[in-house]
Image (cartoon, rainbow, N blue to C red; front, side, top):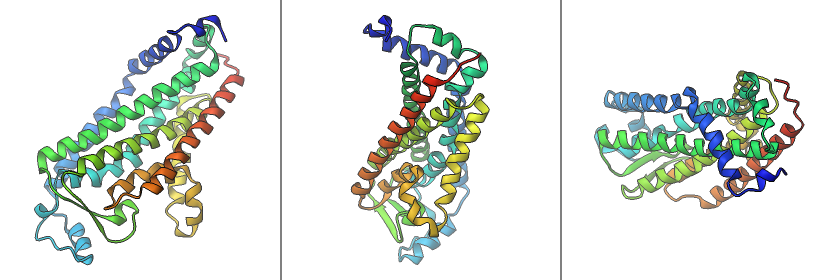
Length: 293
């Protein structure tokens, strides 16, 4: 290890350097605009919808509502639309940010200049992962808080009634009190952002292997969506526990009437194991990589 790396401020300086690069990319901030736009569209759509199909689904479970105002509130809308963020939008944003970290810098010719500095490759890749972790936490927090604030401002607060099937929690419906709903949304943010961090570690591994940022995005998202598709086939249920996406989706469990903490605990352990595995592989491969440009 270089002498400069042993200095107390070495990590801080490296983090600051990586954050400056990430913050300087315009594409880093585009997802925040997209999330705000999507949240606004959801508000407009809810205003114009009568929720006939959800009411019919509740009626089949013995819960009757005269009109949508009896069950549609800000917490209901926010909870019911989080899947679009954590399963569709945020994985794309995280994959793009991760792809730019290594493959993007190789493509631009800036990574070689970074390696000239007295810093080990392992420390460099770990600092990049740290920035991706912070980014995953921030974009997830922005998504959850934006959905919640806009929806509550437009539809108010109230008891949350949710169909369990929407969150892969079995049959029937769950009831969450108005005071408990913000806590459940906070848990969804924490667990959802951990899932995004798993994807970031995988994307960083792939970014360390390929030559261009575009290839990194394509491969990462192909792996992610391929595994998500595998989860749609009931005859492959035996495979579900071994797919990293299964544990990434565990945030959905917080919207069950009684949170299944045991399942969540197991999934969190799996997610940390995936992060360590993907990140370790990324470090080893990056150490051996020949940076030619």
